[in-house]
Amino acid sequence: AASDVYKRQDEKMKKRNLIFIIVGLVLIVGILTTILIVRGSIWQKEKVSDEFKQAQATFDIRLNSDHTEYYIYRLKSGANTDGATITIPDSVDGIPVTRLIDRDLGFSSYNNISKLIIGKNISYIGTKSTISSDETQELGDDFFSLATSLTAIEVSLANTSFSSHNGILYNKDQTVLLRYPASKTMSNQQASHRFVIPNTVILIYEKAFSLNLTLEMITFGENVETIGDEAFSGCENLVNVNFNNAPIKSIGTKAFERCHSLDTIVLPTQLEKLGSSVFMGCSQLVEIYFSNTILEIGRNCFTGCTSLETIYTDFDFVDQLKVIFAQNNEKFIDYITGTSRN
Image (cartoon, rainbow, N blue to C red; front, side, top):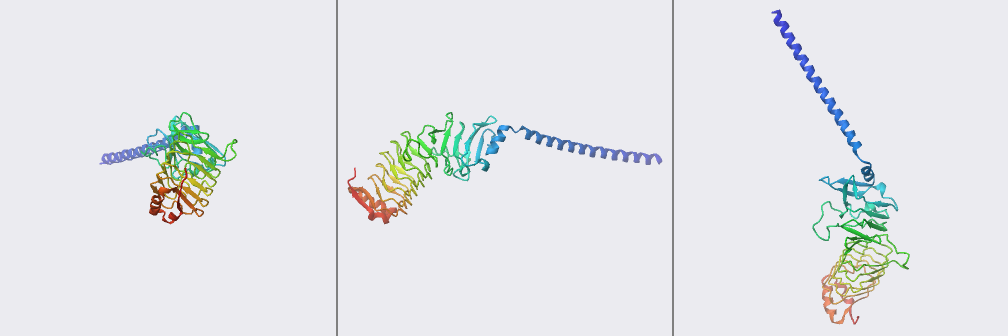
């Protein structure tokens, strides 16, 4: 009987020792796992390159879902300083930087910088993470419209989507004028701030010239066909617009809104559509000339044009123009008169 008691006690001792051993092993494994995690985290931190740290100090920069491209979402406030020059890198740690995205609209996070240098791999500038299939928007949907201190935008010659000339942003073949910097001023050779749009340009993009407060004269190249929405909005010192027989068929919504210094406008001879609110708030506009090609005039085109006196068109087009005005701008019908203007 005594031997049975000793045997049972021995078994209990063995079980207790086994439990201690198992608990000890669990603790050891836990400690080792924790050490590996901590060391792994430290290693990961040490792995971050100086190149990435520098980019991260300037931009909100993130890898795309495939980890194959970097997107820059905005400029960090510490880098958005008065008169700064910001360079968008070609790549970070060998990974190309391909998109500039500002979901706050207008790239207001760049509003204090004076010069922007765009790297060779940037293919999209806008507010969306997903690129539109629309041909006119595949490059982007906003090009620094609220970067109001910008005087120049330069693009790497190796970039296949964008280009620049004299600090102005274009698409690669310069058929689309994307952004004339808001703080760009006249050159040393000019007595006033004037700009001639190159003959390569077919489209003036939305907000392309908006909020420039020194531009006084604009002359269109001979191939411009379309002026986008708000293209010249807020150009308060713009006095003279010379459409120069350009084959412009469409002028977008609010294209010349709040151009307070305009007094006379001779619209393009091939114009078919004038968008809504195009001249809204042009308080000094006195007279405007329509050709007989116009088919549509949007709402509120002349709201706030408190100085408007006369709307001219060809003698044989007066009645038809009145019909067009009656659709959306009836209160200005009595301003219409005929002219033998050549």
